[in-house]
Length: 590
Ligand SMILES: Nc1ncnc2c1ncn2[C@@H]1O[C@H](COP(=O)(O)OP(=O)(O)OP(=O)(O)O)[C@@H](O)[C@H]1O
Ligand SMILES: [Mg+2]
Image 1 (spheres, helix red, strand yellow):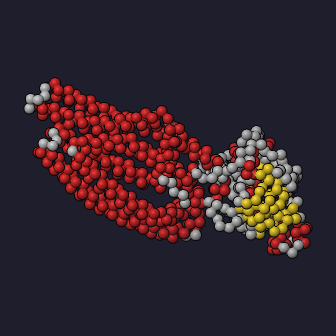
Image 2 (cartoon, protein in one colour; image 1 turned 135 degrees about the horizontal axis):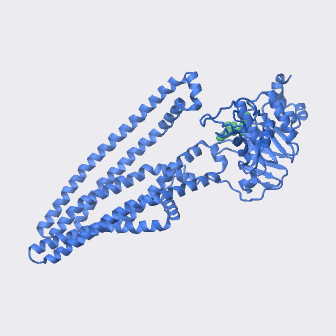
Image 3 (spheres, helix red, strand yellow; image 1 turned 90 degrees about the vertical axis):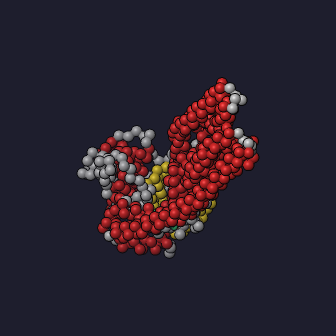
C-alpha cells in the first residue's frame, strides 16, 4: 500500500489551502512570522527595562529613560497579545471555507472514480475513511506551516539572543528540547504500535457490533439465536482492546515521568548557570531577569509545538494516508462526448480481473451482440455473467482486449456519452427510500412523465399499483423510515424492472431481475419484454432456462469463458454445458 510522506501531504495541503483562500493564507503567513518575532522582542524589551531601572537607581540613567523602556515593554506586550488573538482567530475564518471546498472536490472525485474500484472492499474502506482524513490533511499542513512561520522564527530569535548574551546559554534551548522530543517520539511509537495491534481487533469488534444491532442482521440473529453468541464475542474483543490501550498508556506515562525529571534537572542547571554569570558580571541584571522569565515561556511553547502540534500530526498521519490514497485513486478514462450511432457491440478477446483479485473473472471472451438482437447469457453461479455484462455496457474497463460500441472503444467515451442509450436492471438493484414514482423515474430524471407513462412501464414489469400496498398510488412512499410502506422482495424487483424500462434505451440489460418472481410471472414479463425489445439490443442473464428460448441466441459461460453460442435448438443438439444445464432443470418445465 502506498505511503505518503510529510512533504507530499504538506504540498497537497498548502496547494488546496492556497486555492481555496489565497489572500487569507498570505495574511496568515505574515501574521504568523510577526507573532513569533513579537515574543522574542518582548523578551528583549524586558531586559532593556530591567537594565534601565537598575541603572536609574545607581544614577547612570534618568527616570525618563526608564519610563521610555517601560513604555516600549508595554507596547511589545500589547503587540504580542493582539497578534496572538488574531492568529488564534484566523482558523475560524479559513477552516469552514477550506473544508467546504475539499468536500466538494471529494464528491467530484467519487463521481470520476473508475466504477470497478467500488468492487474492492479495501478501496471502499479507504473511501469511507477519506472523509475523516480530509480535515487531518489540513491539520498537518497548518501545523507544519505554523512550525515554519511561528515556532522556528521564535526559537531562532531566542537562540540568537541567548547566544550573543553568552554562548553557553544556548544549552537552555537544548535542555528543554531534547526531553520533550524524546518523550514525544516514544509516545508516538508506543501508540502507533498499540494502534497497529488493535486495528484488526477493532474491525472484528465493529463487525460484531453490527451483527448485534444492525437492521440487516436483526431478524436472523434474533430468530436463529446468534444474538448471545455475538454478544459474547463482542465482550471478548472489547476486553482485549481495552487491555492493549491500558498497557500502552502505562508505558507512555512512565516515559513521560522520567523525561520530566530530566527537564527539571536541566532547569536547575540553567538557573545555576545564569546566576553564576550574573555574579561574575558576565550578564546584566536585566538579562538575568529576562532570560529567567522567558525560560517558562520557552518551555510552554516547546511543549505546545512538540506535544500538541507534532503529537497531533503523528496521531492523524494515518488518517491523512486514507485521504491521499483516495485522491490518487484511478479515475475512469475516456472523454469523447459524442455517443456513437447505435450498432453492433463487439467484444474482442476481453479479459477482466477485479482489483486485488489474482484470477480473471472473465477470460478471453469474443462475440458480437448484433444491433437489435436479444441475447441470453446463462451459466452456473460465479461463471462471470454479471461481470461480462458490466464489461459489455462499458461500466468496467477490460483488463485486456476491447469492447467496441459500433466500432468505438468504450474506454475512449465519457460516461455520459457511453451510457446515453443504455438501460439496465442489475442483480443487486437499489431500493430508494423515495416515492414509487421517484423510484421508477430516477433512471431518466430529465424525462417528462405522467401516470400514463408510469402505468405503461409498470404493466410491462408486472407491477400492480392497484393493490392495497400502494396506499397512495404512485405517490406512495417506499420507506418505513419515512412513514411509508415496505414492499415484498418480488414487488421491489418489479419496481426495479419498471425503472429499467422507463429509461429510453437502445440496449437494455437484465441481470436476473426476476429471481424473486415466480416462474409463471417471469415468463409473462419476458414475453412483454420481447415485444418491446424487438428493435432494440437486449441482454438477459437468467438461471431459468425455460425463459431463454425467447432470445435470438444464447451465450453459455463457464469459469469466466464463453463456451457456447447459438440458438436454443443448436445448443441443445450439442453435447455440452447448455444441454447439461437444461437437462438438470427440464423436470421443472414438463
Ligand atoms: N467484487 C469482486 N471482487 C473480486 N472478485 C469478484 C467480485 N465480484 C465477483 N467476483 C468473482 O468473479 C467471478 C464471477 O462473478 P460474477 O458475479 O460475474 O458471476 P455470475 O455468473 O454473475 O454469478 P451469479 O450467477 O451468482 O450471479 C466469481 O468467481 C466471483 O468470485
Ligand atoms: Mg451475477
